[in-house]
Image (cartoon, rainbow, N blue to C red):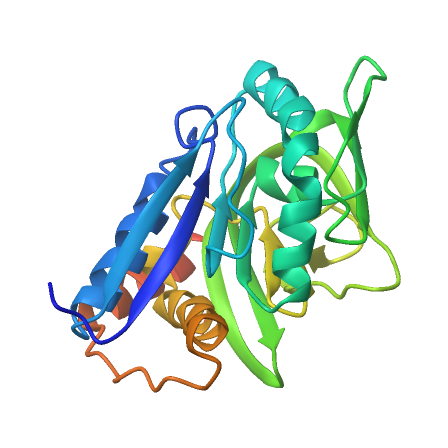
Length: 249
């Protein structure tokens, strides 16, 4: 494709952090760009790899098994400064499920082990005694706009936000970050963390476009208009997920 615009995506640990069909989010990014005659270039980062600073516009980290997440937490330290610099420069970053835990300051496991995080999001996570599982519906507010977001959650972590980031949204149905606060996820500038998966973006295409818009702005230094898409199928999936959660629109 001879595309006028290209987003450069850095997919962090795709072989290890893909437990909840997280690759579906990458497919959404690719297809929504292709429908607009734009392109997606993907660089995959695994254990021991070093991220090339300044060469990516969008970063993605999904969720994984506890053992894999422990290995990734240790490996991420080598790239922490690069990821922080990218966030500071306005690159888009999406951290899902285990990803949000690793994007914070630390994650304390069930046996009391403290795993260091990236510190990009001002939050800490501790493992709880039970898992928070089920359909999750939130009202997300980003850049002054509130929209309903749907997905699935399955996590033992109890995540609490610090002062410098705000929740992605308020829980309408489900548990959210900790099952108590009513908060779900976290947002700081162009960085989003969330427990919503299933995967997240096919049923919430506006969120995919928001991230792509941030990524294009980072790449080209200006707002790049994204042509509206029909999204009829996506809307039906979104509505069905809300209905399954027992929420009235």
